[in-house]
Image (cartoon, helix red, strand yellow):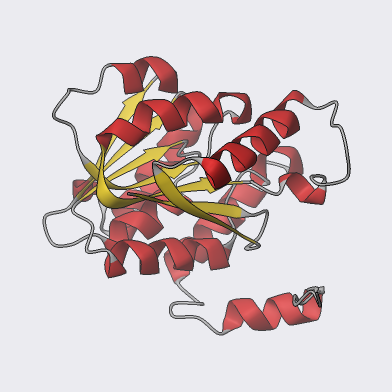
Length: 220
C-alpha cells in the first residue's frame, strides 16, 4: 500500500500557518512572544498556531457550551477554545502553576474572553475527582502531565456527553513513537494510550499529525 503523507519543512510550515483565519491575531502573537521569552525549555509547552486555530474551529463547529481544559500554561489554547464557544458558553481550566496562569489571566482579559473562563489551581487528578456527578462537557482538551494522560481520560470520559469530543496533545511525542521500545516513561504512557484509544469501544478516535500529534476522540 502506498503511504500518502507530506513531510513539512520550515518554508511549507510557514505557508501553512499563514493560510488560516486569524493568522495575524495581535493578542495571540503577543502571547507567543511573551511565552517565548520564558526560554525554549518552557515555551515549547505552548501549542502551535495551527493547533490553536483547529481548536477554535472544532469548538465552534460542535457548538460547544461547556468545555474543559487540563493544562492551561500561559493561556494560548484556552483563548482559542473560549473564542469558539457558543454565546453563554463556559470553559473550565485546570492547572497547578500560579505563575504561568497569571500570564494566561492577563491575555484572557486582552482577548475579551475572561468572563467565559473559570480557573481552578491545583493538581489535575484531585480536581477531576471532585467534579460533580452532574458535570457535563461537550469538549475537552488535555495537555498536561503525560504520564497521567490515561488517568485524565478515565476521569474525564464519564463527564463528556454523547458525541462530545476529547483532544489530547503531544501524541506523536516528537516523532519517537513506532521505532521500538521507549525508555522515557512519558513516551511509553502516550504510546499505551494511543493503542488503547484505537481499540476502546467507548470512543471513535483518530491520531492526526498536526504539530506534535493530536488524538481526537468522539464519545459514542
